[in-house]
Amino acid sequence: MTVLAAVGEEHSSAQTVSIGYDLAVKYDEELVVLHVIPEKDFEEHKAEIERKSHGFQDFSLSQEEESASRFSQRVVEEVLGEYEYERVKMAGRVGDPATAILTEAESIDPRYLVIGGRQRTPIGKAVFGSVTQDILLQSEWPVVTTMRE
Image 1 (tube, helix red, strand yellow):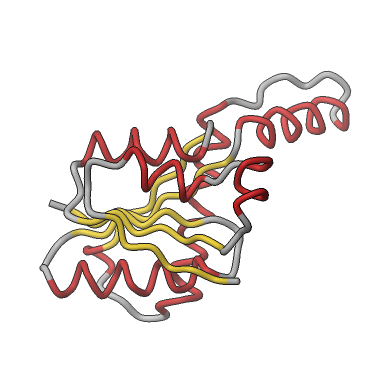
Image 2 (cartoon, rainbow, N blue to C red):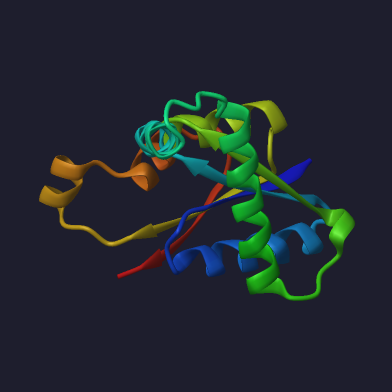
């Protein structure tokens, strides 16, 4: 089995990676660190590249997913410093974050899913949605949530 830790661009990603790694070591599992780039951000990035390069259209979804995977790598290196390299695998996806995280979980069937979150008012959740809430409600796996204000 594995432990899946989903990281974003927030400060809580440090806790997510740290807890995910601790769980992976404790249960002698592999840790998969996943970063998801929202579809909207990918489309904006692609349009910016095409605009700056005068119509260059050779920027692909797989390149953006590789970029997301490199982001996961940077977070792991910043948070853990030294770690068991063979224990940690990086992954990157493009799409709706909650859907992409749950799809990745479906494909690897993790022992634990570790995610970050932040406290919001009920109105804030209703208006803006919540990736954390979506995952908590839809997950078939135990979810460990690190919260920040």
